Image (cartoon, rainbow, N blue to C red; front, side):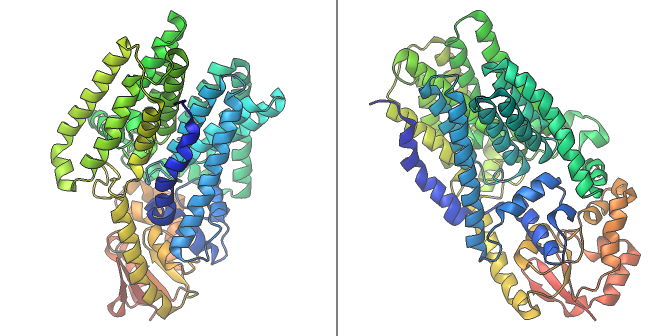
Length: 544
């Protein structure tokens, strides 16, 4: 049976349908959509609203939220469908670019696995800035290679790389990885794309500041909101431990990342000379290191900060399999059997209870390391081949691991108690509990939020403030340095000068007691929280 990544289409339909029809969106994505919507209903454009994400990211999500008038499941399904259509287009563009430099089978395999990894990314990754940066970076590689006229190719690649950077700034490493891939295939286009990419980034950032001058201030203040960042406190030994934990969690829940060393060994073995073999070892290592550097700089140890590694590792796996097929006539056991084993085994251990996972993390990591070590040793000696259909099934199984209903956000690190199914259940419960209160106060009643942005997403009432989720005030309640910022003072003005009819408080995120005493007293004077309407995690305090 011939190798054909076209088989993947029907096989991927089931997990893709689950993500569209059932999974919904991550709470961070809801945060952005909710704050943009509630501030927008009060007259603020996406360019004017602060949601601790740069303007480029805010604009992309505002464009994606085409169904904001639909019920929540339909709205989120539409957002996902639009994102998946973009991933499909980017995958086709990548294949079209690669096929000009590599054999069609290689180009098809790499594009198929890369697109699958982006489409079936962990729910915590999907539509986050790091995921979006990976999409733009993939498109940049495809455009820079596909367009025949060098000037147009470089310009398109440069703009896409600029967007890669501007969606979060800490996504610069993702752009560097894309340039490394481009340099391997066309060094001249890579250098030119890098040069004009820097110019495009600076130019688009200048346009951003021109559109909203506060963006410059926010750019300088973003890192201050994260008191745990090494940029604020310096490096510590605990950072090394936290980094190891986040990488191990990513390797368990995204098996392609675990198989990255095996893919590198296979590609090095197939290299034509010693220099090429070392290149296959050093270049992926450099890509991993720059992505890890961005994780360390942010110091929050969220797995979605590693989102760029997911399509990168998947692409190397697909390339290794395709090249082995070209040389040996079939996929290598060293890549296929571990993929099958992890595709079957990871859903079993990850669906265990949080308590079990927290207690048995070391055992699971040891088992994973053993699988990878045996696969690497096998790859160093192997000359055999297996059946193409087994490789396709293994790849699809691995791709589907992060979107299983029982897949947790992390195995035993940050948010281990969040699973895909639990997040869906929690969202439906919030929606059901908030809707009666929203109907009672009316959808157009202006409110003041002291709540995380995903609560604003479910409430939807207009908030006349460019800080609809008061992030600066919330962070300032436990990070003293934030209270010195101009945006903190500007955010406080929303609380002291408001004509809102209701104060919407999420005590677990920001209670009145954590505000400056004079601000808290002013809110208590204007709003009657003794007569509050409870709804899920929220209380709606009417104006006196």
